[in-house]
Image (spheres, rainbow, N blue to C red):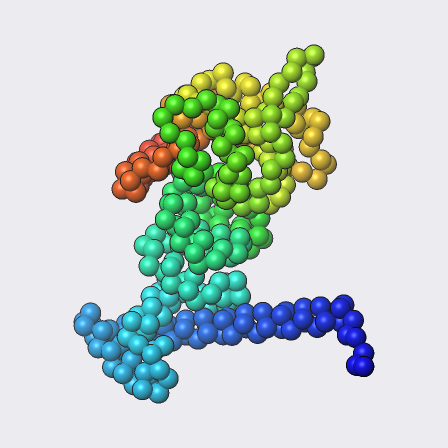
Length: 345
């Protein structure tokens, strides 16, 4: 009778095989991605020598015929144009080399045709940090994640600095996490509902809500009871963000944001900072989720300085064009106000 193989031996060897396969796949992907960049860069330098736009198309078409005959359909005219666009969108080989260890070529294909370089930077680095699949990346882009982040309301210089910090140090700032609006169409709420219905629906669909909140959130408590001077207060939802290393309190409001909501959230945050915050953690953040808000009130209250973020939530996703227009107008207004503030400073 043959000896019985110890289960731990089998599992250990399987783990080694899977790890080796994963490393090999990663190395192959990285090498291919860098090859495609080099090809695109070489084509780019050749095309720049031509004075006519048609010259570039002729170069790509002729080159594709020769390469396809030798190496197959992976070097078709269409794919060579992808490589050319790749090199144009990411001119630094050093950055491409680093990103190729985190992202597949199919990730880059989703990103390289974005016209805004800051938006490209945002998606490529968030994708690498959060290990998004291509499907998740498409979903994030489809939901206009960049436009909905607090970061997109900031001046371009500050935005670029936040992304550089993420790239070089791997540090995620609140501005890269917070959004406005939050799209909660998955809750299935229609017409009339109570605040408790909203809270119940969030907990019922907690996994989807965590995805919408973003990177690093974990659920801590519902209706977190705090006692101050023998008075009881309740935080609707309490989360912890492991990337930001801080507690995040969420207050749900059915109506529009009111100035008094600020004082309530400040009370919650100060209590959390005093009794719940660990020595190695950053101060707690507060998110007030409401169905509407008036921008001037929020600016006058200077909520950003208190660690409070006010955001709208949408229980029904509007047509993409409507949402897109609304977000672009909000971003334009915010940046204009920031520019005006800078001129008068």
